[in-house]
Amino acid sequence: MTTPRGADIVAQTLARAGVKQLFSLSGNHIMPLYDAALDADLAITHTRHEGAAVHMADAWGRLTGEPGIAVLTGGPGHANGVGALYTALASESPMVLLSGHAPLRELGQGSFQEMAQADMAAPVVKASWTSQSAATLGDDVARAIRVATSGRPGPVHLSLPFDLLEANVDAPSVSGAFRAPPQRLDEAAVDAVSRLLAQARRPLVLAGAVMASDRSHGLRERLADALGVPVICMESPRGLNDPAQGTLADVVSRADAIVLLGKLPDFTLRFGKPPAIAEACRIAVVDPEAAVLQRALDVLGSPRVVLGAVADTLAAAQQLTDRSPGPKADGWTEEVEAALRFRPPEWEAIATRADGPVHPVEVGRAVQALVDASRDPVLVSDGGEFGQWAQACVAAPTRVINGQGGSIGSAIPFALAAKIARPGAEVVAMTGDGACGFHLLELETAVRNGLAFVVVVGNDACWNAEHQIQLRAYGKARAHSCELAPTRYDQVAIALGAHGELVTSAAGLPAALARAAASGKPALVNVMIERLPAPTVGAARSS
Ligand SMILES: Cc1ncc(C[n+]2csc(CCOP(=O)(O)OP(=O)(O)O)c2C)c(N)n1
Ligand SMILES: [Mg+2]
Image 1 (cartoon, protein in one colour):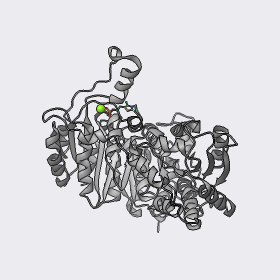
Image 2 (image 1 turned 90 degrees about the vertical axis):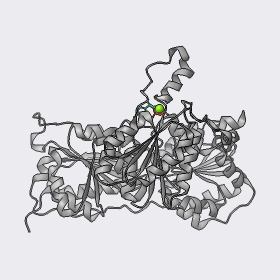
Image 3 (image 1 turned 60 degrees about the vertical axis):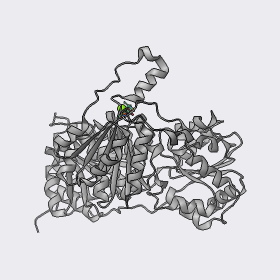
Image 4 (image 1 turned 135 degrees about the vertical axis):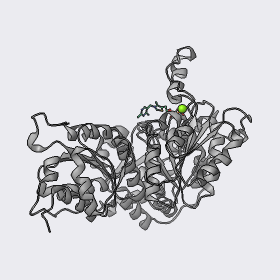
């Protein structure tokens, strides 16, 4: 056998870790990796923008629990991908960004596309570094995967200098595990958390993104059943005002005991200040990071925080499920479930004129029908006000949303990755017209790779979320520069080889969605919608 190159070590280490799929945009610095991918049997989905490749790796991480791998070229390619890492970080998604890099031997001499790549990625990843030796490239890759998947999962960046990828390696190091053992809650803490919940009258468990029903493989429901306590996963930058969670703010403000299970006490909880969380509420914080426990004490105040313990979210949830004293049955859980399900009753009566722009609730209704008719539906949601309507109106067992980072533009890459991860799934992405433009050309990637999914664009010809801020903050006369053209994104889709539908009335929506789903291609349904502010479900109930 010939002596392997550094690039072969990287590719074979990925293969040993179980990786089969890379998301990439090519470039000089990473062509050795493309070559090595052949022998390591790694498929490459080649995107049209580096940000899309990172979003795809993010969606892969969330949907499979295995790290998504993005491979970008050095310098500007890397820089183009960095912004998308923030979405993965905020959604606790395990993924690794491998970027080509100027050769070590030329650093400081003005090498082609030389850039401080690790420094650039550092603020939006768990760990970021540049490999320093070809012999230890395998260790670096193993460490990147281990860090991405352990504790609070998240993105990791590793820069791979070109000279290391090309170097022949006689004795590669093969140490380094791909997984770290989970951090378990100590038994005294299991007892204390169980007792706190059992003694409370209105207890809640608020969990971070990894406890979403699909990502936790139903552990969220099992924990709630075992404890007899509502377990609520918070994934939205709207936080307590997430319109997909009804009147969540109301039940959280009334809770007398809260366990923050991998949930940061951040802006989404209004930093726990009363009345968001009552002054008298007792709070336990279970988190993979010791630093978060300290932050929770500072933010929430020591008398309210009765317990802090380090543990991985899923491990702790499983321990609490196994040890729970048995369900309580006092009506509180039912009350909370009803609050989360609550939507303003007047939404049911919403019906738009036969010829007018469609109300987002009607779009949601039609998409829900498609979701309900599917065996394995995956809902993707993105965009400003339309994204909020989508999440409030459509429920699906598996969701990939742009998430707490609140960064727009990821819908089409997410849909693509979802279809690769789950080939049998019916993937439906709902996105605003502004957000869909970020990565619209990835429809060509989908066509090229034979991936069929449906993108529903809520087209209000506007960056409406920002337009609404202008209306609220500065008044109608000063609302400017947020208009978009009422663009025929459906025709763009057709030009790219995808299926396209234009919908200008609610009546035409179900048939257009059905044709899109049956087209066997990536499909874009361009729905001209009413330009409305995002729903405020909690406020609707109290008014
Ligand atoms: C990467 C990024 N850029 C800008 C923003 C600010 N932003 C949030 S929503 C929004 C408007 C989105 O427009 P569209 O997708 O059409 O949704 P709409 O609000 O019109 O329903 C903008 C510009 C952001 N959140 N993320
Ligand atoms: Mg819009």
